[in-house]
Image (cartoon, one colour):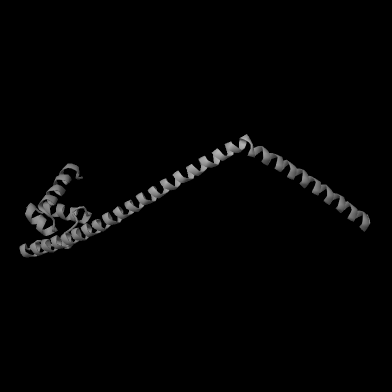
Length: 163
């Protein structure tokens, strides 16, 4: 293929594309004129309905935003009140613990950190050994650093399920 024949081919292709473009423009103009007739009113009504829909959507959106703003303010207020209540409860708890420890020291009670764990196997074994030696429940409780009820419970369970 020579340069001149390829140039002619490109010119023919360009002319064909321009003809297709002109044809498309004619089709577009014909359709545009049809829309301006009776269908134009339908299109105008549809556009008006869409505008009303958008206006209503904006109103609802503004109302929803305002509602959310109010809820947020209420939530923040409630959270602040809750934090104050928690702080007050923590203060009361701290004072109650201090009063309890003062009362225990005044009455000579064993502080909780020095008390034995009644569920620990060592405590159970100690209670059983002391009971086998014939000590009273009060003596066992004092020796094992447990409450009388805990000693009684351990001994009752040992009677029921012991080996």
